[in-house]
Amino acid sequence: MRARNVALLLTAALVVYLVLLADRAFALFKTGTAVGIALGAGVLLLPILGIWVVVVTWRNGLQIQRLSRRLDAEGALPDVSDLPRRPSGRVDRDAADAWFEQRRAEVEADQENWRAWYKLAYAYDIAGDRRRARETMTKAVELEAAERSRAE
Image 1: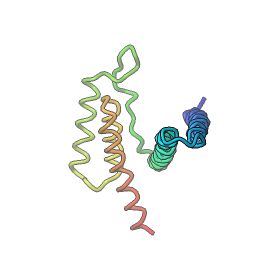
Image 2: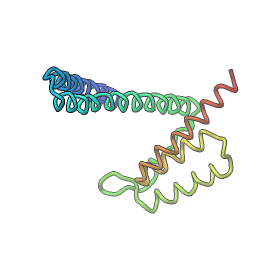
Image 3: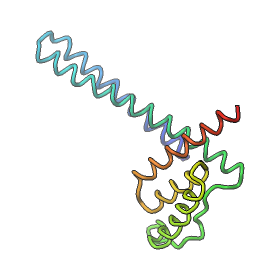
């Protein structure tokens, strides 16, 4: 199953859960008691927060997918197939660190190149630093959007 189909399936399951949670919140509102209304308000915050997380996650995913497709069309997607791997399939830590240093040098050489930032985000990801990978990919998305707006 493709990753996008899995994401759609999980999103649908989450939406069902959020709807059921919202239903519980409204049931608490209907009690008419101060405690029921307070609990209902608290429970209603969870689906609202959940919807916000889903929207932001999907938006980011689609933006990253757009960048990936653009790099693929240019033949510039990062390739780590030649890096040594652990038995688990993850890239060997020393190899990932060396590959990361090369990507970091590319970014330092051209701070405004979204392609370099994308590759650096990928390097963070294979090195296991997901938080920095997300931050760096956000920078790549911002730079690519700025480039597109200048071109229009």
